[in-house]
Amino acid sequence: MEIVHLDVIPLSHTLPEGEGVGDARGFGRERATTLLRAETDTGRVGWGETFVPGRIAKATIEELFRDDVVGMDPFDVESLADRSYTDPYHFGESVFVQSAVSALDVACWDIIGQEVGRPIHRLLGGRKRETLTPYASTMYFTEADRDIAEPIERAVEEGFTAAKIKIGNGVEDDVRRVRTAREILGDDATLMVDVNGNYRPEQAVRTATAIAEYDIGWMEEPVPPENLSGYRELKRSVDIPIAAGEAHYGRFEFKRLIDDRLVDIVQPNLARCGGLSEARTIAKLATTENVGVRPHIWNSAVGLAAAVQFAASVSDYPHTRNVPDPMVVEFDRSENPLREELLEDPFDPTGGVLDVPQGPGLGIEVDEEAVERYRVE
Ligand SMILES: [Mg+2]
Image (cartoon, rainbow, N blue to C red; front, side):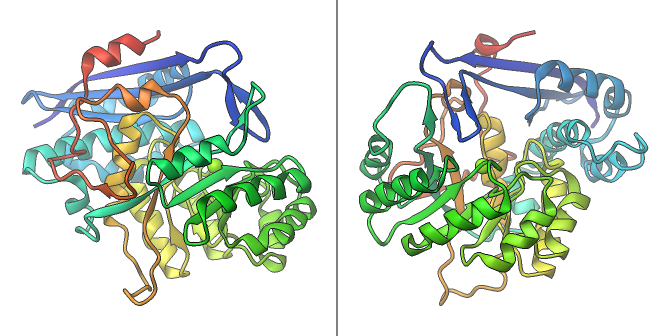
């Protein structure tokens, strides 16, 4: 079996004027990502996603990968991640190379799973769990002036038992948002906060100190992803677990976060980190320093499906059933048809429990007509 055709498919959806959503750094109206469709000489079709702008994704795959991947046996999948650091030499660690590898790698795993008739999580070292705990990613900063309580109330109505909210707009506003979310969610729910790297370390410490009483599951990207000394400083002075990883690429960047214990939780995104092969390497590195692993998801339904398969395979080490630490997976609750419309059977995170798809490969069926609806060149 060999791959004979690659189609790089940029997708975009623009929210109506005034309906932009975002984080403390600002908001936007465009939801965009890039899918990869790989087809084999046996007629199998595998899907992957690369979470960078379409034209860059296309150029990277055309220039650096097409010649090697067309004609490749998908079972040689791990060679993609391994080779990405040496060929292209010197820039393999870059976001664009690792994001391109992510799409190619996930598409290969999707094909392998179909070929052997098993879901990917059964191939990544085995099934660790059959259900996951979805969390609502919500309370965004919005272009329109909106009630901050409403999205949390809706998440509770939908049955979510965990949520992550945006903060990072100054300590007073942070406390207001966290207090509102905690009051609505109740004491038993898990509540995480995301600063999106909008603070300097001293600002992050002020907020972390002020919100600690609200039992925060993790504080995500309190400082910018490249500010490693900032993470070191925070780890010394903050009681809340620190998480990062959505803007880190490949095993070497994650190794720095893990080896120096700059964070408590790493968050690889399956459309950026190098794919499932690299995410598995990152997860194993994390266990060597007892760092947690929780995937970051701000993707289309394809990247979401890859993250779900990955999450189902991640070891609980070192926890036992006596120390509940559920594997949470992120469900962005803002409007995004690229998440809702691309699958014949979309994921349903409501009700507080997500069943891991047990079909072969990614366990999804992509609606190719829907893909074409959002395709941009
Ligand atoms: Mg984030």
